[in-house]
Image (cartoon, rainbow, N blue to C red):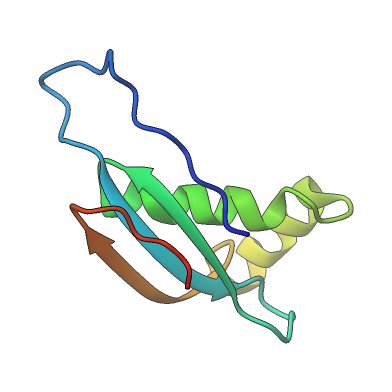
Length: 91
């Protein structure tokens, strides 16, 4: 089941509104893509949240992530990024 992060009702009005993002991708070297759904203000925030989420359960994640960035220039391979103002749910 994907992680859902709720909107912050006390967010600064100058901040862009939170939108729903569905992101798919994988850690380089993994065989299977993963799907995560987040609320985030920007595409960049959603991509970073996805990278954090899929690295969270990896053994020695800090060293592994650093090695992947050295080789590939990014922490994950992102395949799809979809955005919606309405909630996105997994069927």
